[in-house]
Image 1 (cartoon, helix red, strand yellow):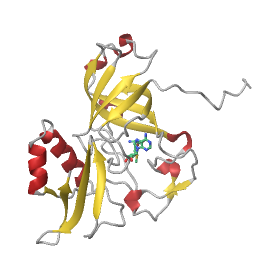
Image 2 (tube, helix red, strand yellow; image 1 turned 30 degrees about the vertical axis):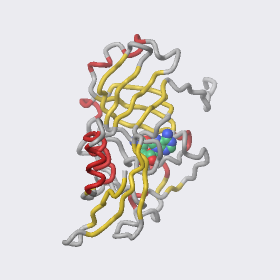
Image 3 (cartoon, helix red, strand yellow; image 1 turned 180 degrees about the vertical axis):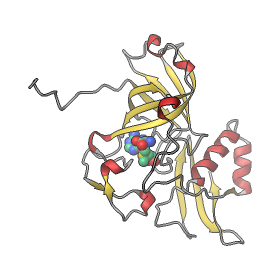
Image 4 (cartoon, rainbow, N blue to C red; image 1 turned 60 degrees about the vertical axis):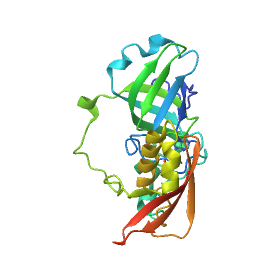
Length: 237
Ligand code: SAM
């Protein structure tokens, strides 16, 4: 029998993410849920040779393989997906948990541009990547081979319900005064619509939550509107 192949490998980050998400709290569970999120993938030497991305501009979406560098290296065979309320356990390989052997992440993201004026920087949109995330590989997305809408999806059938998000007039005024006010408002709205609170806290609460987005601290509260529906009110940015 041919000598058995190696079972441990050393991998090199080919780039690093600069993103709108400085903290894990608030990042959507999957890419595509917050299309307003932006990031840059800055390639690292020696991979920052413009030849490595020749013709990549012909693709609209990319698969990124990356490391959950802010997750523990310890893994367990069973994990508690937040989508199941944090109690039910499934096998780590039946989940997209960040606590997994090798800590490998895989995200399908939109490519918005390529800048090769100084090294290589890729503009990305609709991602779920923490600022600083090391990226191991980039591949073009091939819908004819990979888009399978009829595939079965077990316990994670579809995206979670979206919450209505409202802003106080003070916050509206603050956003109006910023040059990126519109895109920041869109980012805050789409992130909070995912209701980033822990699954078991999904009602009205008399407490403020804070999360960091881009360069601001967003403070919000969960309230009920006249019909009793939960809304998230941004009270401070
Ligand atoms: N789409 C990827 C996948 O399926 O492998 C990630 C799914 S995982 C459930 C998404 C979460 O990973 C985000 O909500 C964020 O909190 C977390 N995350 C993103 N970048 C990370 C990093 N560098 N280290 C640790 N956790 C990270």
